[in-house]
Picture 1 (cartoon, rainbow, N blue to C red):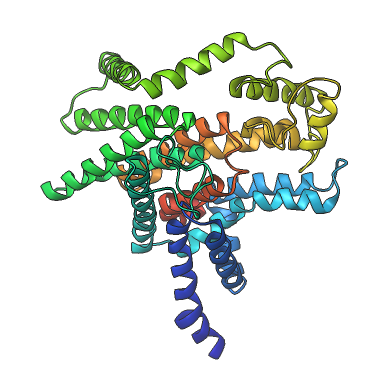
Picture 2 (cartoon, rainbow, N blue to C red):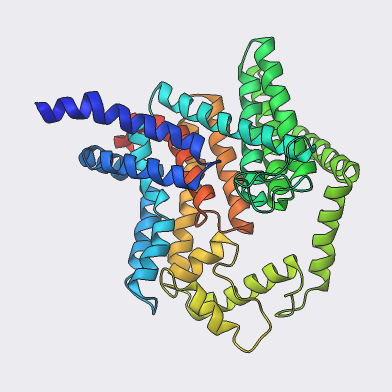
Length: 416
């Protein structure tokens, strides 16, 4: 009886608060993330049967757990010492938190989780403008490279731009749903300022691509829903019109911003100048060297890979005797998973994205359906240019938002 009261009156509210606050901490503080995750994990020990039921029956939680279990299996083979392998596995542990988050994020808690994320990104946006406009000098607690030329505040410019692009998308979905003119104005201003921050202030080029894809999906899904609500058909003509209009907007942004223009052109020039294993002197060349040599490793160990945590040693061996810069990961999650766990792990990663996309059809609202597919699109792009699930902040945001957006499915779990 005492244990039951402890769970219901004390432990569950603390776990719930900790989970919601993760939405606030992810864009701001790794240390706070770890503290909140530890708190949630301790509480989860008292709810293992319920968590296991979600992990078994919820399609998204199950797909995420399968990928994590494959990475766990990868610690049992290969030449990587177990301690190092478990260290890398720990970076993917966010996948195993999805059923825990889903247990807690139900009802209004899912909305509060979104608000927590918006609040943190609003603080980030404000500070980024203050630094970028020379109003506030870069502080010692900001990123080491924070400057008016690249005002990334709490995380790297890559991570900040990826998160900011996603929050633009969520803000636009909220703008579409609210009825109040004042609320629409607020969401619109937020989305506009965040878009300017991504495209013209912070230098994370992945964010440019993520934002473009998400804006395209927002326009596409919104117009399709509008026509459907009026009994009209969404055909290829409408789709082509959306594509051409968005292409025009992208070109306008490209020519309107000297910084954006310069950084995009730089990628093209570096790509054209790249030769295999001779890209050390440029950012694009380094990444292409990473991709080129990582593919060679995958070809040598295609089925099961070299084992979890085995990438650094395998890459060092692959590039021995060349001028290629050594790296701890290939800056591509698909390749990172394939190197460690082979095509089996890669298939499970793709299955996770497929499950998320397919399952959105069962979400109850247009907001959740479009946001869920936006999450998939954002991370499919992010994973092609970074090791997004390996990275702490990006990986934790993925798991948190997957729970926020898909937790409603747990009541239908047994039909899956």
